[in-house]
Amino acid sequence: FVAALVLLWPDGHMEAFEGKVHGMLVWPPRGNLGFGYDPMFLPNGQKKTFGEFTPSEKHRYSHRSDAFNQLAAACFSERN
Figure 1: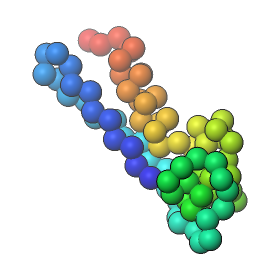
Figure 2 (figure 1 turned 120 degrees about the horizontal axis):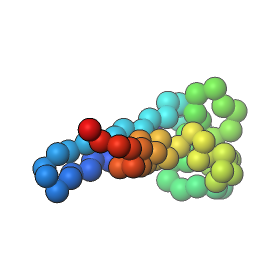
Figure 3 (figure 1 turned 30 degrees about the vertical axis):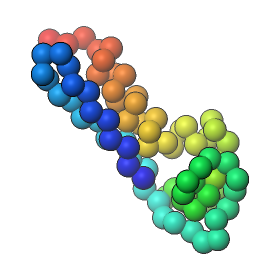
Figure 4 (figure 1 turned 90 degrees about the horizontal axis):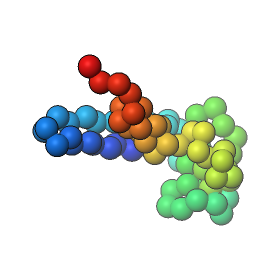
C-alpha cells in the first residue's frame, strides 16, 4: 500500500511525502475491521491482515500514518 501527500506552500515550494507498507494479498479475506482491501492485505512479517488489526495496531503500520507523520514533521520543523 502507498499513500502520497503533496503540500504546496504559498511561495510555490512543493514537498511530497510518501508512506509505504509492504505485504501481500491473501485469499480468503480475513477480519471485519477496516475497509476496502484491509481484510486481504497481510503486511510483511505479520500473521494478521489489516482487517484483523485493531485501529491502534493498524496505525503502527499504516502507510497513511507514515505519510502524515512526515508531512507534520515538515510543517512543524524549523526551516532555514
